[in-house]
Length: 509
Image (cartoon, rainbow, N blue to C red; front, top):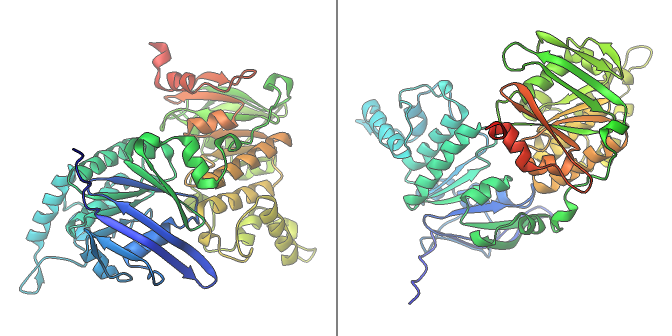
């Protein structure tokens, strides 16, 4: 005799939402059970955030749909009622006060009181009990400013538990975490499931979804596409549901002749910083995509920054087109034709409160000055409009602030700025981090077009399928040194297994 399914913890039925002429959600339904981790996937703009705003009460849905919690209809469009119903959303951008303690952050706005005065002792005791429930070691009296990003994420979860949350939404929770912090978060998530809490997990990272999800629902263009059980999960099925095309069309790499047949664009010899990078040497050929692979902390970004002149080297030399060159600063690198796309586009790459046009033109402002030194804005506007067209940047106007764009379109704006400098060498540090699968496919097309035009590309990526699909060769780093090379052969792609063996040292045992 089959046991009956439990009552859904959450049942969202036929949820629609329009913003003026734009229909952001079209009769979307989502069902989540107690103790289930339900992944919600889709490209940026698919409707995931809008659906969660409806759930959290931040956004009122159009008439016609309903939300049930524990089988009972609830009032929508009210954040206070949503919180009282046990709903908590933990966003990618954390909302903690770093100058306050952990306990103060957990109970901010909901402090236990005695005779109208905040009961600090009771607050610390209750915070201690919640932190113990999560299995964390830091004290509730610790200032949040002293915590790592991973620990701050756990404080956000503790805050949700302090309100007796039974439905927790995690929005891209691992974007800024190290691998160790990610593992710790996963342990906490598994523990929350065991306590019967329903978790909605939004992520672009398929490996996380494979590891954690019980079921996956996919949205596309504001509509519900379908739900897959854990046993049905596959990359081809998810990509097809998210972007409406087969996985075979995802990577755009065309056949390129082996590096030995192309001139060397950049020669790196004996590069070191005395601490994190040790005696690294390699050649990068024209029209080649060369990947730097390895585990987090292996020295990949540090090596790229030495080449670009962002950090000071203690030893090593560079040759560009066979001629020695001294790169002592990023300005010198740019003047030589070497550009660098940072892995942290928001903090180190883009000017988020400035327009798309200003961001695209930032590296070539001197070109737009007339003989009196006045800037010709019309030239810059035409350049930005052309970049938007060439790179398929989705924006209403080049005058829109770049901070309002999706992650993938922000990344393409940053690429556009770099390309306007007419580089010979492009260094890409995690070029698709935090972007959806549709934007990834477009970025891969851009990388392939650059390689076909003869530009040499050095790409750092933590995603092995990306390395296999995009790169011609991979240099593997471990403990600050290049420990081996894995290359694509005729009719055979780069071997993921060979990369991991070198990265972990398994090949030496």
